[in-house]
Image (cartoon, rainbow, N blue to C red; front, side):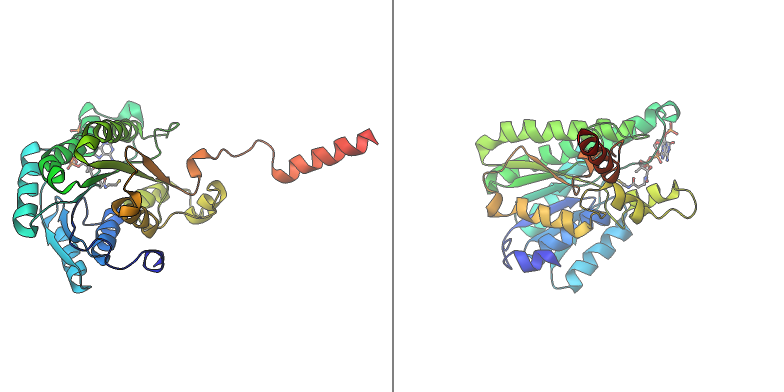
Length: 284
Ligand code: COA
């Protein structure tokens, strides 16, 4: 794992982190990594069994983890979870707002409730947990990391709901960084691109025609030539949680191999060179 070769062991020793949606996928990898580098971690999720399994895996590997089941959509649940974290682990330094819900759906088929559901999990949930964590983060001069996306930088088909939610999350990142910086609280975001072995990626694969290979297809449209790994996102979270990032706030770090910037050119590199060669020849 690259983080182990790059970061000093124990850089988060004595810190306590809450990771919402931390029982699976990218967020679990973040929880595992923060624990590996010394933080005690609390995993919040709706599915108690999945949360328990995640906690067990981290504890078995020598980390310290607890489960705090709950749904980020209600302020009461967020408040309860923060209380539990502080009573069981003593403090709160890092909040990773990772809980999200998503599915692919054309806007004309999207019900109002479906739109609202995603906004409530991603955006309202991020606010609820951040707001409930504020008094504790104020005490520890802690930090927040909001897991965002690049969906809304341009447009993404069938992702009206998630794009709107993540645009809101980015706005929360900048607003809270500006308002809470005075208390010594840093607020940043991470915008992952396509990440291998995730629910999001398997949903994309379902939409592909038989015989297409998603990894091959992605390598064509991601300048760095591969899909991201969960560890790429966890390393970014570890960096933002570390003192090396102590003057970084209000920033959403895009971790996508330059994918969102890329547009397939109308003319290939080879085609362009051929045109140039012919232009030169015709001048001779
Ligand atoms: N396409 C269109 N609408 C969908 C949908 C889909 N694939 N999945 C859910 N909805 C709609 C439901 O029909 C419902 O709207 P309605 O009342 O008008 O029918 C609304 O969204 C709420 O759905 P419901 O299943 O009751 O909500 P929930 O709170 O149990 O779960 C999600 C919502 C988004 C979390 C759920 O779709 C889910 O489990 N997704 C997979 C897990 C996931 O998203 N992981 C994160 C990946 S980034």
